[in-house]
Length: 225
Image 1 (cartoon, one colour):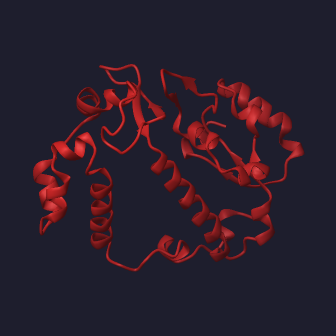
Image 2: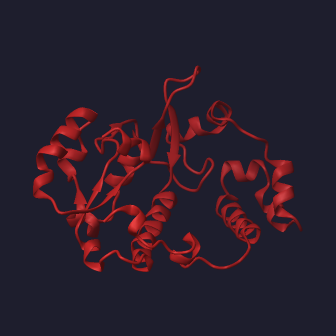
Image 3: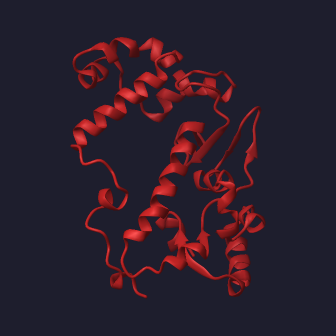
């Protein structure tokens, strides 16, 4: 079935059963939730998140008190502490996973903190997306229970002093819920492969044995296949 033959739902919000409130109100709600969660961290204490929450206009107050950061600035002032194992820096708890992105002129790689709350949120969104498939007409329900080919970085993460680092897609695949294992392709062994060409060769070799319904991944990864 071609993609253009599938009847898509009118909006993503409807497909995911999102509340019908205005985007502005929803964003303010998220801001307050994040401020409340991080108010006892070093970052939250430095910029007085408690006072921002009590203000009449948290958004404007946040904009006044918290400066803009690029990666180099926030890493040098804050995030480097999380790599050293210090907890409660910008987010509650200790950061155990870091996503690596492309380097800059000042750093070979960017270490982006991946919190447990972020991974938990990703799993919730994943479940919502799975459930939302029932709203897409012309997609057989039985297809959901077949193979899901997820293409991304290696799940064989680099071990640091108290943390793991790697591609975000590799971290996501490694931390996928246990109940998803029977549907997950290319499987744990191939997913660990670091060399992209070797990974693709292994997938091509095993593909005739799989019954794949969906291909999941960042468009750039899919285009490289």
